[in-house]
Image 1: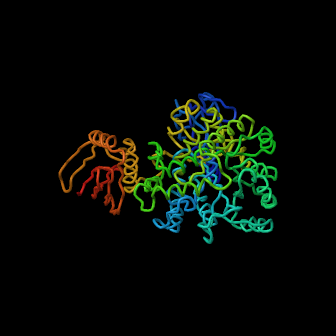
Image 2: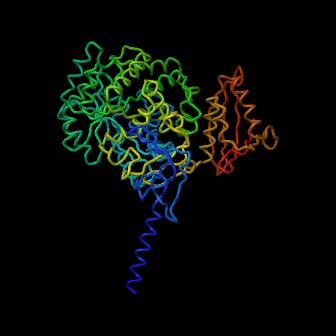
Image 3: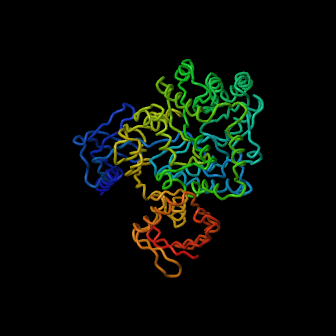
Length: 584
């Protein structure tokens, strides 16, 4: 009897082990370490690890195992956005120090909204193949959220700092208690205390916002006055086994930070072309640099009301935050003079006397020089800043890096194995390697051929668990209606039509049919978008009732004089908008 029992236990163990394994057969592995494609491989996942990688004819798949057909597909490591901020939504109201619209939407309401939507942001990262994110400046409350979400092993890994220890703090962020994202430091003594204050919250690293308010001629002297503070923060963090990231966009501030032990520069240098000695310094110190090429341009274009999101971003960003960017078209108080003032306030600080275009050019040249010089580059977006959307902005950042002169392999490396080096995790993640964590993305096309292929995701693996992108985010009626509204305001016909069913019907309430079928609707609205370049719809109120959404709308740009006031009732069926009723 005992023998039978032991045999049964062994059989159950072996069976459970088989069922715990996943075999991805006949797939091409994207080897970001050796920069080569390895075809006809079988990759075995056991629990949360890559347990084997061999040619297809070298591995026999046991009966009952979970098998994924990888023929014609490409398996690459899960990506990492090495610079995000969850305390910022990416929407219009998230940085009142840059554009103060607190009269329209209170900052307290904005903070509350981002707290409640951090999980949505994480799911969007996952859907887009981003399995880890590095939050380079948060708050104590967000560190608490990080801890709660870490229990869900299917969500992206989050590495997060506490509040940024800063040499300059905007007034709007003061006195927010545990929601405060900045801590102003005035002395080395305070610097040490601020590092120690963060320790009970267990940050993954410490972040310094090294802001120097000086003109170029006085920059070096002014920057050196803060050096004792910078050194103290870094030394105290290192004593407590914490890496240090530094926001330093001038060559001299970055140099001072690195000379004093900084591990991670979260922006490219924008005030001058860096000298060879600077490149050698970063390489010798094994500093990782995240260039964040697109974030400033997103501010410029938003304030100029020239931000045009791609169809991909309109369909993949959080619809509320991306929708808020279009609010400038109708918000009271958003006159040209206020926008000009906002631009000056955000970008024309005393130390900045070069144009935005010039700074963009400098960043591009420096990235190419740093990359060619052997400095480790980690792709990061600075997502959360106004108009830089969480998750969906990553592909645009990667394309900008390529425009700087990096090749596709270098860009893929910057999005996978290089960010792992920030926390010395390159031996456990960041590549398709036996023994590493099974954070992976299965693509339908070759990413080394085109970076656009990174959006053609068949499946995402997080800690060995496979997920279809279409199943990661729950599609709600409000999401669908907001997505079509964003497409409408962007006059992007593909993004506008995506939420509608193939047999959609449009009515004048209660029952006068005016259009049937997606193609007919697309033809009608395409003509409208072409003829009406100033078309814009403002939602005055919204009622959500099960599968019905009722929007009270005010549409400008349709008539020469005045707005069109109307009510639209959207009916949702099978995750698509199936009927729309217009009440004049």
